[in-house]
Length: 145
Ligand code: CMX
Image 1: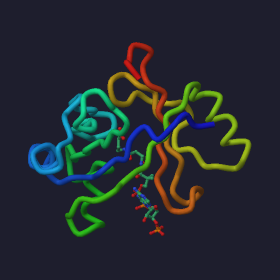
Image 2 (image 1 turned 90 degrees about the vertical axis):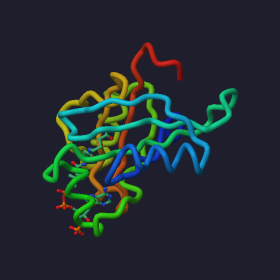
Image 3 (image 1 turned 180 degrees about the vertical axis):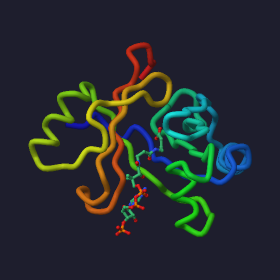
Image 4 (image 1 turned 180 degrees about the horizontal axis):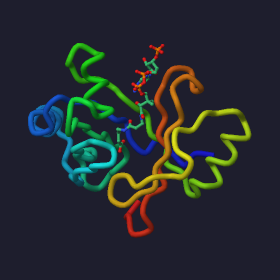
């Protein structure tokens, strides 16, 4: 069903501070940054430091408002950041969603929505995944990976 882990999503109270930590201290580099009003996030995708071996990504997710998903997540978790989601990359999100529905997994949206870099995204509710918020990501056709 899944191609690979696309990214691990970290909720962060402040995007600039989190980027500073993850680049200057941990050596990641910023691949992409954008705001997604529909998801209520300001986000940055970070890749492994070695430009020739791009084998992992993390996504930093800061809330656009207190009422957003990330705003509520941070409030519930004492205002500190932490792992909010695990995202699997898929080739055909419609087919994967149909299969997961058949297998009894609760998906959040009727149809996939737009995520980072024009990707198509869907989420499986943590209650049907053993407690982890799973995101499915079908990268945009133009994406390099
Ligand atoms: N990981 C694991 N469990 C989670 C969770 C998370 N990120 N968020 C909520 N939960 C759990 C709660 O602890 C709660 O469990 P209990 O009932 O046992 O207490 C349960 O799920 C329901 O929580 P809730 O507070 O009633 O529901 P929320 O309002 O927090 O919403 C969810 C949960 C999954 C519907 C919401 O997080 C959501 O819509 N997520 C998808 C969208 C999203 O995450 N957008 C931001 C990222 C955008 C991007 O990646 O591009």
